[in-house]
Length: 233
Image 1: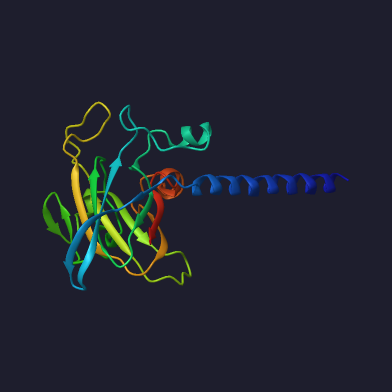
Image 2: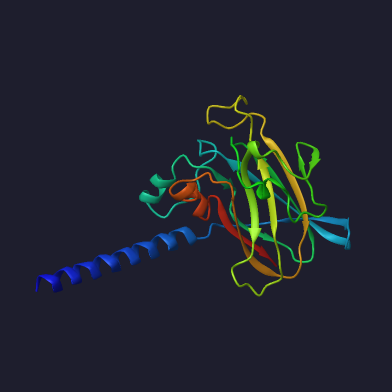
């Protein structure tokens, strides 16, 4: 009887854990409002003249009075993510297919060293470079990394191949900041890339800047913060 009771309790606890994990996964997968790249005429590219669209994103070290935190599902999640970095105004991104797209990043956060230099290099841009404070570069120093913007496919995807990875440099440790902790002269980064046919992809930051296992938890696994969707339509 005792053994049967222990077994029953174990099953109940196991089910509770599974349900809890499922709930967390559901919360993490909730989508914020979509932001759409704005048409901006045309641009000459290696593939000829293509429609051009532009999108602006910012990276914040934390929320503030003027920059509220992304929406959370409940008080527990809000507390868990309090004081963490995030992208704004949204992490649900939509860009046009068969076009050239420019994303302008304003990066307010600090950073550190990334040990995988693959993500310190630019991948998938139109000419293999990004603009960093007006200078064209193919990579940034490994010890000056703040975040990455890395778009990739779902596992076993049958969609057109698409991969884009943009290293976002840190603000120096001695950079002047405002009362909210934002750099007064943030890093300005721009990337231009060409899209193919329509598809739905995901993106995330590949620089460990979160919580839990190897700092890849918390905001790094939460859509609306440091991960999201990237739709080509």
